[in-house]
Image (cartoon, rainbow, N blue to C red; front, top):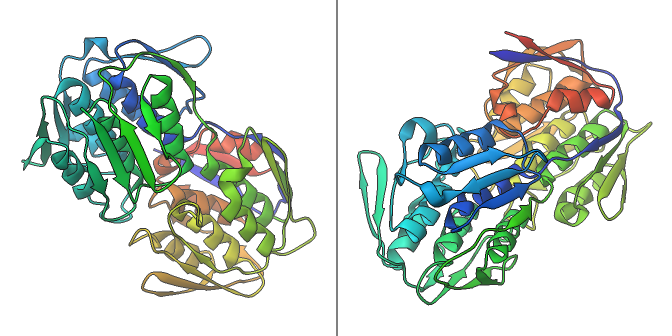
Length: 419
C-alpha cells in the first residue's frame, strides 16, 4: 500500500487543470443503463471509485470500454443479472445508484446495502420509500435491497431530508415510469443538474433540476447519446485552498466558477484575492497569512460539506480563531485528530470545531480516514515544517486524479512511495 511524502514550506504557484466530477460521473455511469443504445461519456476522471463503478456494471453484463479519445462507452444491451454484490458495493456507497436504473429498465434489482467512507450512517431509507411509493415491491433481506416492479408509476414524492443520491436514484427511476413524478425537497447540487442534462440527452423529460422541485414525465424508452461530464468543483476548491494556505498563487482551469460561490466567498474572507473567468479561477495569497474564518456546512448552494476539511486545515495556520460547524454528516472530524499531531490547536464540541491558528505546523506521520480528510492532510503537509507522511492514501485515489503530479506541477515537494 502506498503513502504520500510531503516536505512543506513552499508557496504553490502555477495552474492546474481540473478533472471531470467524480460525483457526476458515478450517477451518469449508472444512468447509462437506462438507454437502449450505446452511450459515450467524456471527461470521466481516472479514479478508484470510477473503476469500481465500471467493474460493477461489467459484473452485471454491461459492456464498458474506453475509446481512443478517453471517453467511456457504455452499452447495457447485454445485461445478464440485476445484481450488485456486497463485495463490490461495500467499498463505495455510490453503488446504490444502480438501484433506480435497474428497477426502471429491467423491473428488478438486488443491491447490497452500501458501504463507503466512515463519516456517518447516510441511510438509504429515502431511496427505498420513494421507490415503494412508485409501486415497487421491496424487501430488505440478508443485507440486500430486493426490489421488483413491472413498471413504476409516477407519483409526488416529498423527501424527508435533502439527499443527493436519493434525488438522483429517484429521478433516474422516474424517467421510465408511467406518468408524472414530482420530487419535492430535491437536492440542488450541480451534479444533480448534470445527471438531469445527461438523461435529457437520452430523451428523458425533466424540468426543474437545480431547484428543490423536479418534475419528470415518464417515457417508454431512452436512447444512446454522447455527453461530457462537468468539472469537479471539490477538486477545484481543494487546489484553490492549497494556494491560499501556502501563501501562493494558484489558477485552476477547466473549472466552473458559479459552482463555487460559497467557497470563493470564504477564500476572500480569509484574505485571498480571487479572480475568475468563464472557465478559470485564481487565488492569490502572496505575502499574506490567511485570516481565520467561520464555516457552517449545508446543502448546495450553501457551503459544501466536502470542502469542510480543507478549510479546517486553512484555519489551523490562520491568524485568529475560526469555527467549523458540520451539519450534514456526523463523525466527519476525524482528520482534526490527526492535525493535532501536527501541532494544530483544535477543540471539538459535538458537531463544532473551534480552531486557533498557529504560526506553523510540524510534520508528523498521519493517517487518512476518508476521502476529503485525506485532502486536508495533504494541505496541512504542504505548510508543515519537515516531512509529513500520509498513510491509507487509497482514500485519496477514490476522488483525486493524479494528485501528486498536479501538486508537483505547482511546485510542491510531494511523492508517492511504497509503504
